[in-house]
Image 1 (spheres, helix red, strand yellow):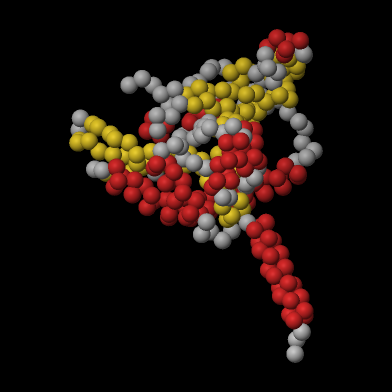
Image 2: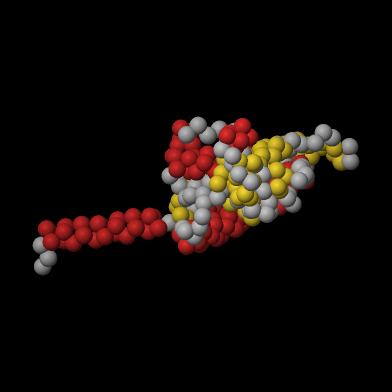
Length: 297
């Protein structure tokens, strides 16, 4: 006969082991926060539906909505979809997650001379990596119907299957980040490229001539941005080699809606007079800023 004390000890050991395994499992899961999609009822329902759908993924741990909302508010986040990498990293660190999903969702009444009044329900969904601050992917599912209820129902029904695709996007992003870190360690001995001074006066004092483009190009305003009425600032960090060619371009303030891609496409078409120090060409890193405004109709 097993004595009661022995039974108690065995049960305690089993409980402790179970809690340890659960804690280890949770620590290995990817922490994802789903922030509010604006202040509308559609936004709240869309964010809740996506969070619930993502919670079914075994390798994702969804941060409690109240917890992530409070942390984002405490960090001063007010729903911006146009952030620098540092701002994005700071927000993710405040929440305590690996990825966070933010956006905007609404149901709007639309009118057109070509058709009767109708309703559009859409969700702008931005998935952001805390570790890099990068916008991993943006999506904008949109549905039209004769009533607001039908339009919103179609949108919410779309978010369930979409969650599986979003989970896969985050898994691939994590793998890409691990590979990138490994490559950075392998390139530890690579010479550091000099950052351009803030202004030409400072450059002149340091004996520098900053890179100059042979001609300036303006990015096109994409239709994907027009559909969302998006206006934003995109910053691109550009490395220019000793021949004046763009060797690397990285978005350091993203905006989504196709604006980032439009900016990088334009940068890749640029050719520069290279930076010079005391008459000798040198590689240099510069920041190019593009302000996107919707063209007048």
